[in-house]
Image (cartoon, helix red, strand yellow):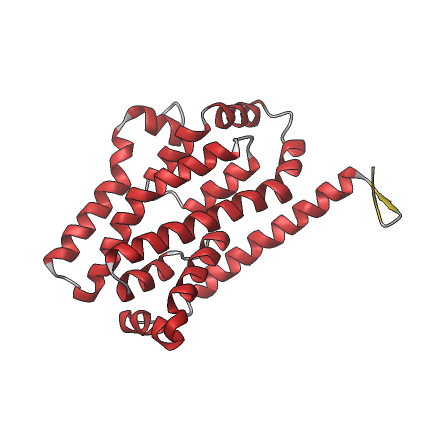
Length: 230
């Protein structure tokens, strides 16, 4: 039992309340994702967007990157804005830092509001205990490899990592290094949208495709992602 301002509240009720907040957050994310498809914007709109904020444009882009990473909603949009309106190196650094901070925030949010409920709910599941232990013992390499597989939504990695027993330092350093190749290529690809159908665009598209699928050429990685029967 815990006591808050003279009122006793059971740990179970606190656990359920936390999960309720976590569930509402997931519903919000899904709603924002669906709402995104109702907006219509062009490449020129993305280029012009930061200009209206003048000297604060970098800060606004950075905040957008952090928020989109935390909410897990179309992070490609602020990355595209950074890539199209800034030079390559600044766009990369800003995107990398913003997405990293947002991922850490989502990790802690998931751990605080969802971990206890999921641990209690699936404590008797052997499969859950297996993957929970696996993430704890192989955390860094698991996060690093999942980050390198481009088609796995990185917000799902943040959430599931937060729900698991993985150590934060393993999650952080796996994300720290795992983000670098993908963001480098993504920023390069986004920057070529200004010259659509140019040779740079096709090179960037090829690099992005190869980067997204190459890790799955290794059997151990396929087993990690899809299970032993792949």
